Image (cartoon, rainbow, N blue to C red; front, side, top):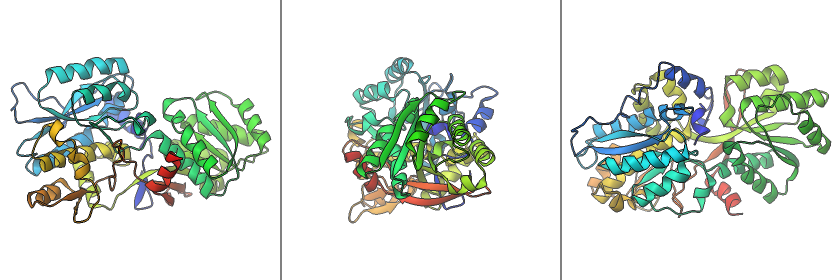
Length: 449
């Protein structure tokens, strides 16, 4: 989730992509006076707090170079525990978000997560565990039998089973598959693929390649390039010779804009249509593409691909209200609401809470298997969109299916649920319009292929 949490606008459609508008800048402003440890809900309980308080470990970088990732967990985590507590808590127990600072470093994560588990009572679940640290954190929590909902995008967790690991954040492979499938949908016959050499971007490469190959689209070039270089002349000249009819670029804004600008300069002003992840959608991309490539290119030849949530759903409306009432404030909340990976923190806590209610136990070893039970679509299950609705139905001894902020949850045998993707285009006024919607089954076909 490392990349997804740094991305963050108002979309013209009723659904919006995972990431858009400059989330990094708004959160940096919030951090300028120093990082207040996630003040609303993500503060450690005072000494002597009631033993009835249940702690959700929020494992994230709360200080250091990537502290913004920890900061923006405040809204969804605090919002979720507030919603649960207002509905009476879990089996009469109040929830709190308990901060565990992993500093965004795998080695520090081992020490700090282990220490938290050894010295803190009543940790009944965990959220966070981002891409930079999940590989070391997941085994520790799994061994301790702590149910976790991770926001990482690492593909290794798509086929390695950890009983206490659950994920509603799409792995990077799926994001790449969606990029490739949109190229197929747009009718490209020969595509040049350019991937920035970073964890977030190289993870998309296998999915892109698999999607193009399965649909018999020729790959004119498949290059991993350094990010933010001053020039990519040699790269562009090599690609031009292959004469692709489309480009797929998975890189940051600066690298993407430089590639497009130099392609235009070296190719007599002509640049093939380009497909990019929604993660770089923001004012800096919009203005740069408009200025360098022109409005026509921006509105007709630039396509963005990412996941999205239904902003008209009952779950989203409660989520929105809860997040906006946290200490982070309405301005930053707007950016958070635009990031699906963050929404899985909220959904994760609601699902854990409902699983405890369904199991009549707050012990992870007991309630863990109910994570799938309260989200599974099946005959006779009552569809619920809020914690209060779920508790009411469970008290009536009804089976439930929680459909949350990020839509229906369908955990596979490795406890992954990836959601849907869509393509998006920009208007001349920078509004975003939804295009092709790609369902989980279509993505799964690429994954299994």
